[in-house]
Image (cartoon, rainbow, N blue to C red):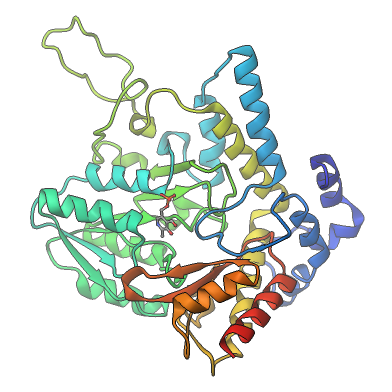
Length: 421
Ligand SMILES: Cc1ncc(COP(=O)(O)O)c(C=O)c1O
């Protein structure tokens, strides 16, 4: 395995330089992008930074993103350091860097353990009453469905699910048509876990804002895939994980809360650091308020090693280049999509054809075999993928990240052909 220093040297070395020249997807032509993306050597070198086993091909990043060595080293070093010196440290000084990674202010980031925790903070903190309507999709992960179902059960809010279409404009229209005077929240995923459909969150947020509706987005697959800038995206609230596409330690996530909405999203679980100026001798005895930042939602002792691991993961992304990562993810996704598309007689792709509605996953249904059986047989050939039972969709999902290669995609396509052919 290459050392981090060697990796960094290679990143800036002549051999890889053509893949790195002042890249900016907004000002780069399609041809230039294509040139930038032909450097499989570059990505082979990135792959060597992952201690992932070579005995099996991992293609389930949508569930969990395995960390590269620099992240594991940062975690281990920080655990060693804190436990040998007893300097358990504080994570507060590190929040700014994490906020910057997704284009928001330090005061707008709360550090959570996963996407679901962030979703629960949004679900319970929003000022809703019985009869208020919340728009979701039929393609929710349990992490978005169950918290909202729970609020519906306990508080009588009404969930309005819809079956998403396969294009951005249709999905925007579908949402617009569902809005009534009682709609208070649009709580859709940025990318669905079922078919990998990308929702037009920017347009949805603009529309919602014009109607006075909150946008509370399940961003489990948004951080680390897109070159994400949450300010620019415009949603009010956005929950994500570091342990998927950011490739950070398992059990780390964040919640974005727009600064001007901090006092509208009630904090219910609080503790040390949620409020600094309380006084038990005060009369009347009550909590004076909350800290002025999103730090109010996370409290008590936090894990410094975990956050050091997350920071190593964001540094890893920045060193490679976030636009470059997004383009590579899209390139592999397209490669996989096209390969599956050549097997139309054996399977039906249920992910969108439209490229902007797709980024990191492709899902398909076998035509002549039960999806569970096909999943088992493909897995037995040395692949880690996922089934999609959600909403009775009954499909197989493949999700690829920067450590995957076209060669690996070729190998799963061959396996699928063997199993379904
Ligand atoms: C769309 C979506 N939302 C939420 C979650 C839950 O994420 P976490 O396990 O980080 O809470 C997942 C996990 O796969 C997901 O795919």
